[in-house]
Length: 266
Image (cartoon, rainbow, N blue to C red; front, side, top):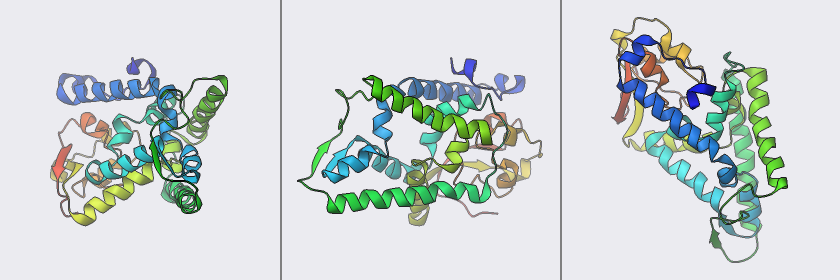
């Protein structure tokens, strides 16, 4: 189903190799399910509801989800973005209409500025909030369902436009690069994991086997310069979502998943 709406970067040789292609089919399947479930789950990713809940000293669904993103990021980085994020699936669908690479560099820092200001607001609301603390995972939902009336649908399609417009103007997954409020939780967790030297999931590279064909860069949904990272022995970038598209596209078997402590950069 996902293949019908998303541009496939896998060629005939890749299809013959089996496992990497099956993994990408699985990735597209999980992203599709997550995207289809988004009207149900959208409030659990809401940057607004967590503020409303904080003012009432409520630990709501989005507070729990964002905390889990940070904790899982310690071991798995941004794997969520590549396999389970509904807005990520939406962004990859939109990439079919605007497949060009977005400008990066300093623009990628915009989301961290937004996240810092927003997170500071959440902390302030908790400090000055009123009432005893309670845990309400389904806060402001209808029996756990987010979009249950016409007003919720308006907000839902507003979020869809929030991801569609940057993709059309700037290129594929532009919203993930520039304004995503969830990615910094995982990036921060990943950096903490490296600081603590805990085992982490990463994409390692056999740099001596790279033939610089460029297939990996073309396949990357985040428009990373994969060959340049491969020469360092691993794909170490805060923008890497560990989707494995680069590994699936590599006919030389240079790239692959590895779980363990990060090696020294070459």
